[in-house]
Length: 518
Image (cartoon, rainbow, N blue to C red; front, side, top):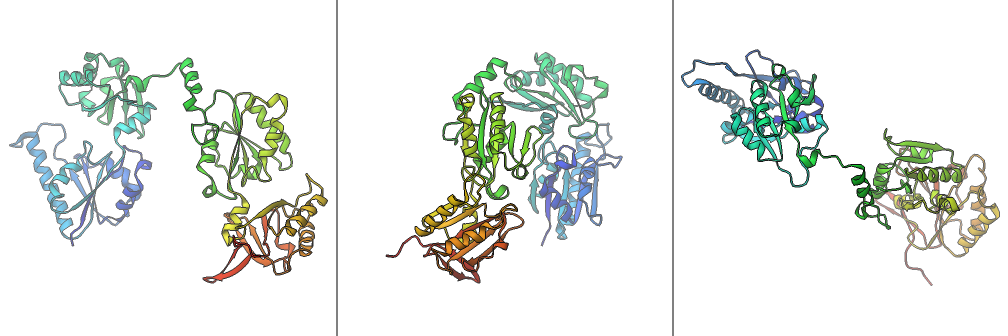
């Protein structure tokens, strides 16, 4: 069994830009090979060093010449060709012995890289795999913070070793360009940009992503200071253009860029402020819909109860306004006031914002005359009832009711009346807000009310923090329901007369059949 040759791209210099796959292969290889000049220092090895094991065979491939003159019979090219042939045979010996060889390459292995010379000589004899890397062109664009091409513009990659007149001709014929291999070619390259009439737009990047990174206008760079690891960049005219205020306003007013009435299209940009009430689901990001994620990402301000805001990863661009859980109206008014000043505001609820949450509070305040012109949208979220039901099966598979035990916004007598009527109608019941420190007695009281209309063996599901780190599921009966197992983070599901508990594969499944007996 022979080994595999891996040409591994390391990116432009920053070790953090090494891909996960590259790091894995470097750490697993039997042999690590890399090119260097005669001084023996290898930039590629330095980039890869954090991923080396320390006990691997190293094969430095030291160039006999770089740019100096040689006395080889074949001249410079003859010396280089002979070196590549000898280096290939050194690596072939390891491959033939069954050792995997990783040949390190700055940037991308097949983009002006030395690896390609080994690939040509060895890929036909041994298995070879290339791991792409971030190119210096990409790194230069990132360093400049400048797109290189937009729409139909054409990008041309050129070596700085071309004659001045050829470079100028190619620069004239393209929209955007990146000129590699500077250093001693810099003066010729800059003159070619001037000949092409494009020097004014040209930029310079030195040691992109490395220590000592430098950027500037190509026309202003001292030729004596330019290293080999530098690049001349010509952004396309469209890519480099900046829309004026009128264009930006037109873009913001373009109907194609404004969210549609059903909330499924657009990119959440608005010419005026707006409030979007979102539901984040019962737990972490896995329960978040893409629609809500997009609205959260586009918001300028996030408004909500503190623990619910904590579920949204912080973004330094955004301002967060946390408040207590008992000030819904004040929170809604604050969000609407922000929107009147032109802000894009997301009001954050857990679960679904329309189920005992902030959607009603916001819409109620938004009905006041001073807020009637503020756009308000509601985006649904996965409810706690759905999450708990799914975790045990389908106890809400037939008709059911959702009832909150909280008597903060309605009298307890009303809660009892609704429990009685839901029980008499033989509905399964999802109970929200079952217990708090201020009202620990209500779960027991609700149980006693329901036992007047439901059999003691009626299945009951207690779901606490479903989807979160403290998830706990308890399946019990109405007669054995212990209020001490319930807290404010628990959702209680009371089954109907048809709800069943079946043990499958060692665990209990709860479901309410969709058919209903006579």
